[in-house]
Length: 547
Image (cartoon, rainbow, N blue to C red; front, top):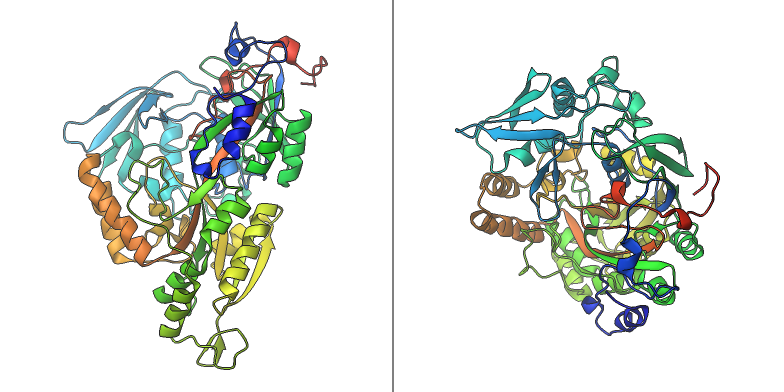
């Protein structure tokens, strides 16, 4: 535990890498310890209000692309198994599983379970979900995750078997996919997933269900009465959409929201002594990056991509943009990944080296106007990014300055999230600046594998050596034996860069003290939300629709 005064001191340390904000901090107004706050018997009832920075793109688990949609769907859904923070699997919908002796199949036995409409969740739902994910017409970004599965078969309503073309290192991971209700998707047009009703109103199998979605304002979740395990303790969870970070911090400070997942250091310093706040640090999976569209003539040259990477001041991003709560990045696999390459250094800030590389690639500024040309064409690019967030705007400004300093004519363009996604899918961009949440498996295939443009490789990157290293690494169950291939993969991606990886984000999560049992972790700031609770005396309003 850290007291507020110790928090302030650590925030003022010259090296913020040493910052430790663990569990909770502070002195209770009534003298109780933080442990006392979570003591006692949890009681059901009350509403928690959580600030989120953006609206989900869709709540269709098969097609969603935004991280916030994934976080919401985790509260609405149940999978065959659940990944723990220690990377082990815990049975959820599955009562258990059995792997065939030859390693070519895994069979799951299902627990009795229901969708929120009372219909049973059966093996048929799993098979139909598998088929939709694999259907090329749907173009699911999850499709690559099932690449090793040959087929799925419902042996009976409570038994499903997946077969593999060859043995896989982790059969549970290889078959961990989202599940949708077969009875609700029988009539959908498979070739037009944008029209599916579940985009706005998915059917829940998890502890919460959607009560309301007011676009641009909030999503309201309520306890799912059909949930097969212990019911959620909270009556409702309001996910309030506040794109502006300053507005989120103000709502946290005034008590209008109970959780903010991305508190910047300056705000944490100011609010360190706030009597109602508890602090949690998450060594996160999020990294900031600029994805290059390698189909563009200039960016097809790896020397140009490398030059632009050397032109980016990563320390400035960490200091000015993140307030010190992060570190310069070198790889698609963040430090929390088991296969992260510790020996790989981030590209240094070397504008002179960047200029030399651009000259070697034929880009020169012969007319002295500050913009390089080759064969009469200027070195010009547009960087697109999501709008409505000061962090994105400020980051785009840094990129524009950094790249202009080495002779590129750069424009930046803020797009509404759905529009930005359309531009990416259609390849209508030169470069994209944003953040990405790495999966827990340490597998960047969706970003870098050739042909993964229907997942997240929107820039069209293709490298046969990268593909080969992915195949070899993913085929080895023993982590020690697989690690050299993962390291070689990261080294190859650092040499032939599909993107400039800029920073790893360390999340600072603040919760209101009335929200008891809150346990944000690297899986999600809302992990275990069904177990969080608010004591009756801490509920803000007594009316049924209040908090």
